Image (cartoon, rainbow, N blue to C red; front, side, top):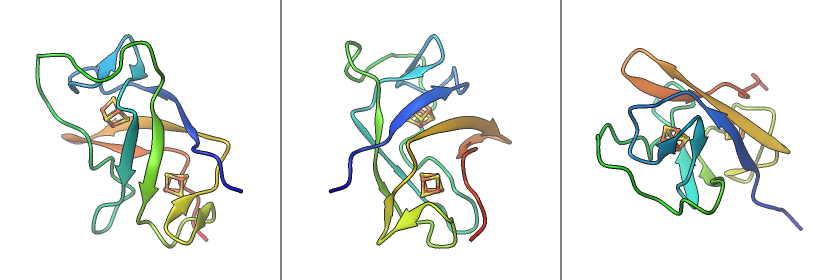
Length: 95
Ligand code: SF4
Ligand code: SF4
C-alpha cells in the first residue's frame, strides 16, 4: 500500500499554501510539461491551506522520475524549491 509522501520543506514563501517553509496544501499535484513543477503553487499574499497539517503529494505526473509509480510519488518525502517564477520538486531523480 502506498502512503502519501510528505512535503518536508518548501522555500516558495510567496505561495498561498506556504507558511514558514512548510506547505499546508493537503495534497499537491506535481508535474509540468518539462519540469517536476508543483502545479498547486499559487503566488498570492493571502495564506490558506490546512495550517495544522503538513502537506503531501497527492499525485505526480512526472513519469521519468525514479520515484514515480503509476503516476504517484513513491518517495518517503519530498523537498520543493523555487526555480524561476515557479516551484519544482527538488527530490526528482532521473529514471
Ligand atoms: S509551492 Fe507547492 S509545495 Fe510549496 S507551499 Fe506552494 S503548494 Fe506547497
Ligand atoms: S520525487 Fe519524483 S515522483 Fe515524487 S513528486 Fe518529485 S518528481 Fe514526482
